[in-house]
Length: 202
Image (cartoon, rainbow, N blue to C red):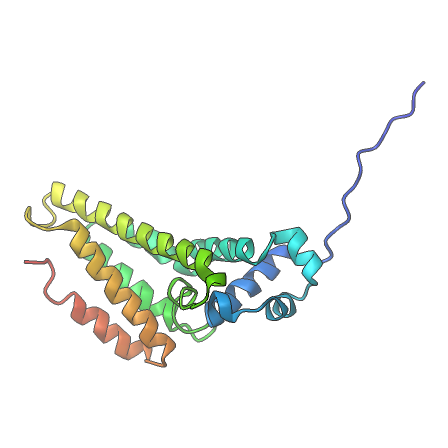
């Protein structure tokens, strides 16, 4: 009778990967891609570089995972806004969600999608490109929602869905920059409200 071989058991990581990723996301959110050095990241995550590489890959791969976590967590207001029954409600929920997330007292001010891209050197090029694609995807999702609103008669037939989407994203990005500069939630909510005062677009 032959001996039964056991499958090799991997050594446990010894840390909570989800918690480590949450901490990395917050550091990228606060400092941007280039501003978050490997030493700062591993210290914030409570792990060694070797553990970080084994669990998440290099810094760029970690950043992409952090951006996914941000999209599914703090930025999940975008998906919820797109599900609102009217275009105006979708636009309102989108900007209101932006104001809330960028001014949360328990999180870094601003938006990871904006802060993360304020990097200047070649080392941050891939991260900037990932964030550009992320923001463009947001514009595309808004455009598709407003195109549907035109088809359903919820927006005037001569409305340019792409322009409306770009307008909202531009206001949203401006809100994020202002939040990072210390603007209050109340002030930014007034900006969001003003941006929608003449809805629907003429």
